[in-house]
Image (cartoon, rainbow, N blue to C red):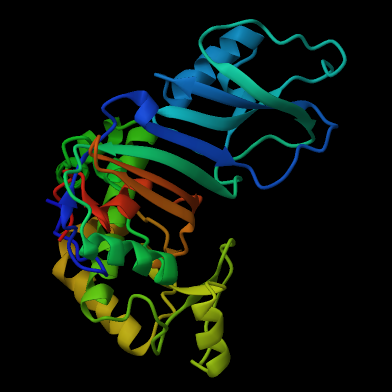
Length: 345
């Protein structure tokens, strides 16, 4: 069901294949703070392969003889990749006697005690090192797209993970939520996944509409702004100071994660959203029935430490980048290379 999306620097001119092996996709979670050294929660930085985050939590709970609910995490990481992420384990009274069990299921890279449980969204960013195979050319258009990303950032689309392996989470959600009996049978986790898919679809289409109006990377009248690295939002007239802060990635415009609540948008920014919502009334009506709450998400993000190397002999494209939490590396890839998601335009 998902609509074709516009990308700000034009369609990708090259194609390639990702994740032919786990070693081709490395994700390193950057916590952004150090464990304090005191408290009842043991923070572990763990490297895993072939385990989802929830599978890792179950294994950790078993190994340390605690319940899965006593294990905290910040971000969900891919099963089919090499991933490094932080977990917290509630181990009251064990600071002096704690022994780390030996295991081959994962590697412990760092550890430290802290006073509070790790909660979702606590980390600052993720670093990626990715190999794309079967890239047969690296043309000037692609190189210019990469230069534009370094200068202007990337469109902050939700990635394919939100929409399911078969890209059918949106259609399945609408079908299930239209049936009260099926809705009641959903687990809380599954309901959350389907609601997220619906809101992500609307957000992506709003962002695509802004790109179509050529206003995705600059402030417009009626925008609600978000401070980089936080969820703090505000609204101001567009001044030279606002434009300067925008150019430095200190702030960005936001689009709605649709739901109940005060929108706050005005003028052109509001008109664009209202047009997308009207065109997708089935999705928006469904979210209102489910009493989803309105949130906001930045429409663009800065890509830090963006390094790209092409190896023509092996047809390999190597990419390294750091993205803030909540952003998708596959969405970055779609700006540059067609990886077969079928969603780029």
